[in-house]
Length: 361
Image (tube, rainbow, N blue to C red; front, side, top):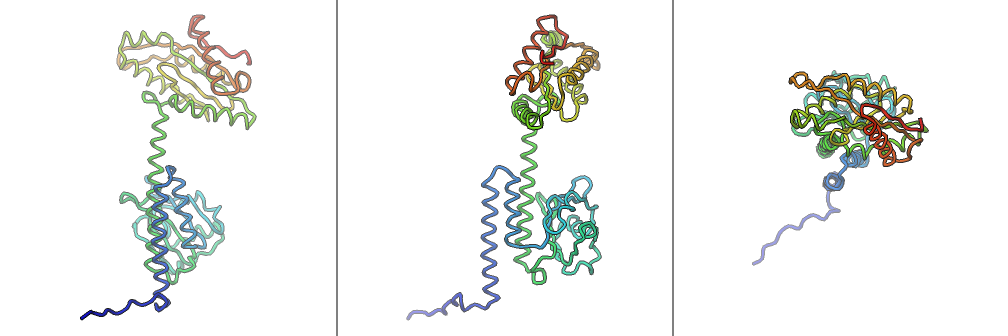
């Protein structure tokens, strides 16, 4: 004798509320899939973050919304992204620790739904006063990664706030969690990039940075119709330092030289350890005259400095310098480096401890 089972209700026999919940549950699953794809489809965390925030716009449709990042030291929140009425006045605005709904969420790590902000003692009207916008309701969730609140996402005058339910909150919290992961990834990627462009002995940049940035700097000078100068210098008889004091002491001298150079760099300038005991200074917006004044002062500073005084070695050094510039000497990075190198070797050949400048000066 066969058993009979009650038939499952046909989709069109479901109550309207049940149909709505089912549709929204399907949307939720679709969103999770799209966000997961975003996290694995790009090596650029900023692009991932943009895709996640696009989902906020598409699915939740807030009137105004913002993403605020938390300062790890002060606990303050800063408007990093803001959209909607008056949003341009909010970008960069900082909220004190614990200030307003967003500050409360950042401190507690718990989401908040406030239907009428004027009835909530945590509400701060400072942003409204700045934008001349009236906030009525707020949905705010923390961005948490590795158990730390990295910021918050805040929806203002959410059009469905009065019937905001668990699915909505779960979606928004998912967006916030993925956004926190994307920002964490961005932080790590930035750190790795910074390490890859930093010299491993000094506080200066390395040759990889030079070959990446120099063409960009020349192109920027071309577009801005401004000069650009480059100084290349090599320490004189540095091999004798290694031979007499050892390579560890030689590396310490290079590190000390980097510490000497770094505070002398003008705004927008970069210092690079090109390799061994050879260094390059990039000087945007400097013509050859102003660059020569800088290089001359650096030459005297290096010559006057006593290296490794604390170890008792008390090493004195000189260097040979070559200075050239764009557009007079070369039109590209290779040409500038070759010209500066030739000038520097001319100083070496004529007795060292000097500065040779381009004939274009």
